[in-house]
Image 1: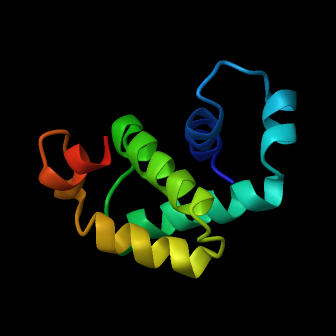
Image 2 (image 1 turned 180 degrees about the horizontal axis):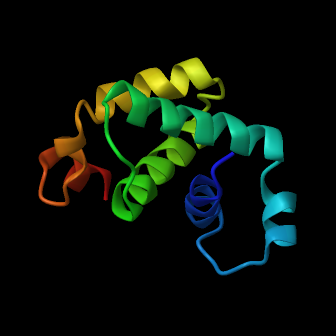
Length: 101
């Protein structure tokens, strides 16, 4: 697993500067793996390189979708691709990203 994805998902889940032990109690590693794999798949699908901003936005969206009941990698990937249809949709001024905030 890419450590940057873990940090972004951790930040999305906890919204605090907890240590890794606290994070592991918050979300099991298996679930973190599902979330990070969905986000990595979005980047591969869109032939995009992860940036800190794009990872934070996608990880936050993935956590939101997960909390809404979308628990599988396939569901998360599909919904992320539908919500953010290109790397341009991750830009701060893009209508899709502003609707997320």
